Length: 164
Image (cartoon, rainbow, N blue to C red; front, side, top):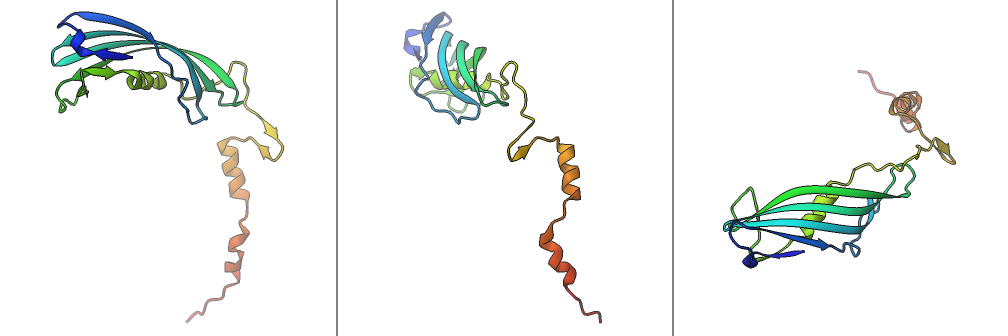
């Protein structure tokens, strides 16, 4: 979605709605598989040196279940506000040197920030045990680690020291 600041009049708001296609993006594969759809509504208000943009996002995201690694469809609704400034030293606003501002990266950032870090499919349970592995709590692991003997240091028991 691109906004042309030259088409906005001072103090008046203009609304834009667009479907944004993020299907060509690849993700890390451990959190999100893909973004199926994204509908963004933007209300842009130009105040000469500041452009204020209100963003509303409605998206369908395919996430990955933290327990089963299966696909989970999520419906994400998010709202945020962005400000753009003509002054590149303005610490509180984004700086875009062109009059045409591409909002896709900003909208993607807002969308990804609203996807839960840990996605769990409804009804999914943690695996208990399986072939060549077992699931235990951190306390159980620490107790077992204390009981284990590391044979790599046994050779040090045979070292004799000269006592002078």
